[in-house]
Image (cartoon, rainbow, N blue to C red; front, side):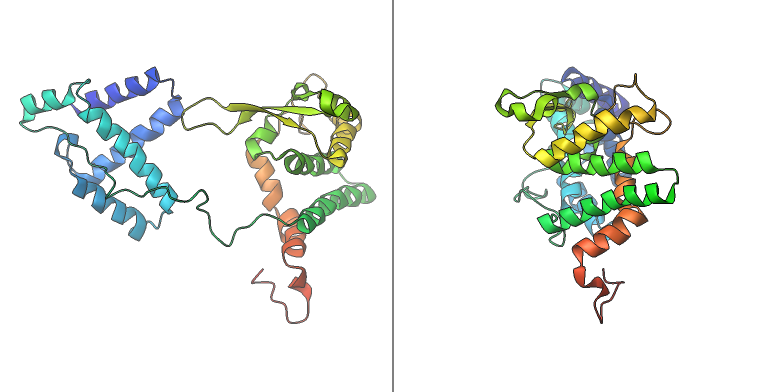
Length: 292
């Protein structure tokens, strides 16, 4: 019966056009709750959710936003089982003498009250810090060129990539999936030529839905100049002329979102650039590098 319920829920979500990745993750969560409660879905009660939530917060120390996401997915399964249109309540009552009931309600789930729920310690860079970071990225190109070592092209690509992230307000995946063809002209900013508008095809999607698309107008001339220089003078030297990606690797592939993150948090970019950017007093007399 449990497997039939999960198959039915899977079919319901597929009918709504949800992606397999989302459907599979939700099913795994329900199976985890099954194992935790050690009860069948028609025997679940709100008390099971209370105990489960306490375990997630007190023992596993999960963030409230994460716990709320788990509760939401469990609520969806519970609502599916208790919806009379699918008939599970009647089937269970006939077979077991009991039936599923709603187990997630406003008194035992975390409400979404704030737009931003991240740590207060986290903050965006100031303009000065951004400038220092981008200057440092440019310095890596000069250092590699002076040392006559490999990595000059990659350093130049990375420096331009970070400028695009800042100049057009992109996320990692949005940046990594950019193609050369995503650039276009903007009649309202003819001075930027073919780089007046950026078509972002892999924007952050609503859970389970396809990526959102959006157009981002170019507004920073220095960022446009950096992209134009990279496209015209640097990218062709990677030898991936036929590859559609904007950011290509030395082996002719497309750079991945995880690689962007790795470059940002690497010892060169994070430990040196951000140490100087975020904490100018780091090297001052009495400064403590461990705190930074």
